Image 1 (tube, rainbow, N blue to C red):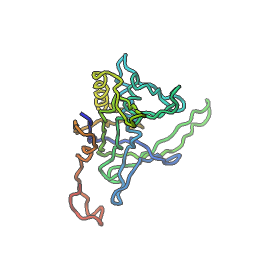
Image 2 (image 1 turned 120 degrees about the vertical axis):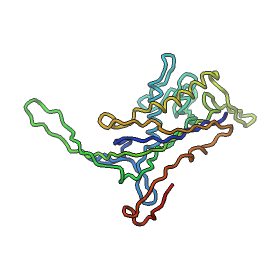
Image 3 (image 1 turned 90 degrees about the vertical axis):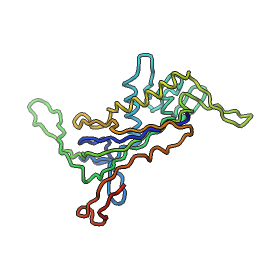
Image 4 (image 1 turned 180 degrees about the vertical axis):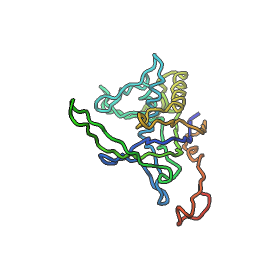
Amino acid sequence: MKGLNVVWLSETDLTNLNAGEGESNYIDVKKYKKDCIEYPYVSGQAMRFYLKEAMRRGLEDTEYMCIPNDKGETCGDIKKCIMCDLFGFMTTIKGKGAVTRVSPVKVSPAIGLLPFDDNANIDFLTRRHRVSEGAKMEGDIVNVEIGTNIYKGGVSIDMVRVSSDEKIDEEKRAISIETVVDIPEKKNRVKKTLEALRYLTDYSKQARLLTDFSPDIIAISLQNKYSHRLQKLLALRYFVWVTQYPHYPLEQIT
């Protein structure tokens, strides 16, 4: 097996999973535009973070995932560290200089499939400031975009490069793949990646906008050739009404 692909749909409650740039008192939702209509999305960087944190929560006592230093560099030890093995790194290793590992686990942005304006609202919050005793309590009004939606997400795993390292033969001008851990441990790391999808929890704004972002419908493929083909499997059909979008025909859209 050379590739493992996962694609899923997840329906969320009213929330803001990944804020955009916004302003000091306006917290928006990241959006993309298709056919002049805006849809929400969760960035690939955020999805990677959510997946890594879900894996970290499920670590056994004997398993290890490093924490990046103040420069954002990780340990780079793919034999010991599950995170560096599966998610790659750019770091400096003593005696080797700058080292880069391409992530065997690829993660797509989670894209909303329902128009944002039809499924969103603006929540008004107040940021309270701590004040000394006897002083007047003050606060800033904050506007937060929130919405419900159905998101499509995906993960692709390059099975050949999980727990393996590239070795360059300068004389033959060739690259070979060398496994650095035993096969049972390699399988365990892939299993932990899949299990983590069931327990995605560390997305933003959950203190006051709690929701479940774990997959509701999921498909997995095991492939003897590595590709991302499965990522096009799922689509959502919905109606765009003439009264709401008069420049669109009343028909079913994929």
